Image 1 (cartoon, rainbow, N blue to C red):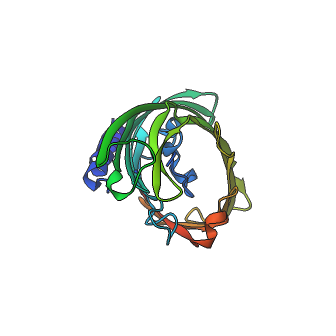
Image 2 (spheres, rainbow, N blue to C red):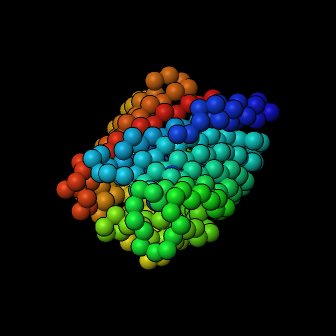
Image 3 (tube, rainbow, N blue to C red):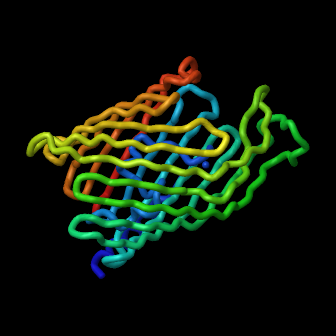
Length: 292
């Protein structure tokens, strides 16, 4: 019951903070905030968590480049059931998208320290597209267009003392959006089902240093295969420093620090390695985690 009150308090704080809309955004701090990509993650941690991730600009210097802010809360509703809430605001080109989802998980135990969490995500996306900023290719109504696309996702998360494995489809239903094409025009595009698979390992180098390699892959039909590999070193269970490589996209450096028992702060910077590197050096990502 105490955990339930903590989670409800976290949800209240989450709504009081508010949110300021691409296929699911790619986070450098994905391991620290996995409920955004796998609903089964909720309830898998010892404490109720509120995570705030903010991109001021994913690609600094690129006009209408992606800007993302996210808020999420997750915790245990009971010994077997986890629950979470996520709000993600994503802005790119002429489109604003706000995602609101509730996550649920159920825990199956397989011995001491070995648990399988099965998750469900339900909610949807609020889209707003401002066509007044450009000329469109097709006969699309001018002005602003707003709509709501419901969606759901599924996931499985296996957690042991020294490793974890994640499999998820955070958005199963196809949804329509608009994307920019040559000449500043817009055309309709459809986001297909995204499947993500990955895991990580916790290797104790000694009593004070832990090495954490982690990998996450992304598969979408008709799109290039996505791979994100990162390695971090955790010192004295307080400070974490690492690097990340995203296939054909970017390289990143990241650091996080436990400022207090209930507060973590993190900063990452992505350096573009794709064709867009001639227009931008990359962009920052910030993490704030409250542990109740």
